[in-house]
Image 1 (cartoon, rainbow, N blue to C red):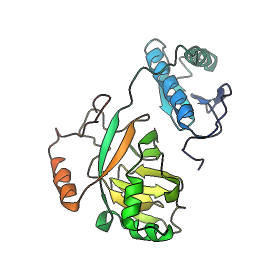
Image 2: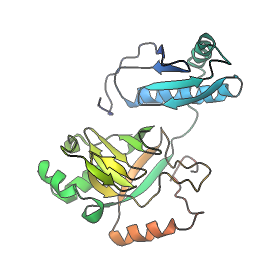
Image 3: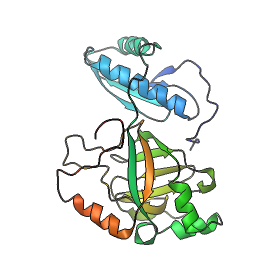
Amino acid sequence: MTSATPSSCSNDAPRILAAGDGTLLVEFANCIDADTNARVLALAQALRAQQRKTRGVLGVVPAYRSLSVRFDPLTISPAAVREVIAHCLDASAIAIHTTPRRWDVPVCYGGAHGEDLHALAERHQLAPAQVIARHSAPVYRVFMVGFMPGFAYLGGLDPSLHTPRRAMPRAHTPAGSVNIGGQQTAIASVPGPSGWHLIGRTPWRSFDLRHANPFLFEAGDEIVFTPISEDEFAHIDALHADPSYRPQPRTGGHA
């Protein structure tokens, strides 16, 4: 996986590529950095606004360095969609007008919630407390949400914690798992298999079908991890029994 940290991505003009009968892919760069991702999200914002005026454009899916634009080919032609995209790519049309939401995400590191913490610390000749301190220090950027519903891929991991994926993936990791894989860290939204290193777990539900918008995080959000104890984990976890409970960001709006 290409690094999700600041780099020297080129600022070449975006390429618009066919990706099937009903999708165009707008590719911004061949590497990943925050500026490229911001351009992706700005175009997504502009296209969502334009979507209300353009019959046949079904939606957009932002990724690290590209944006998929879905459309109904029986309603609108690929050429017409390309024109819509070209309009929205205008510099004045894709300016970002929103402040990123910042989340203080509670994480219980190690123990039953972070089975791989000690092994990862030994691999890097660090104490577990040093891994926790380095992992919880940065302000991470949510570069994209994907793989599983609500699974947040984060950029900004301390290079000293970069770790190849596990040689043997585990068949099950719980929802809320906070993992390290390669140059990335992530928050797992639902239970599932994983080859990433499980270092902790958040009691927050980042995918909850009881809410009109089941996704807690979205691309462009900022995340800071806050270490908590097992007792604090249990307390916050119990709050989710109330369907009306939902974590809120520190800044930038509401979930």
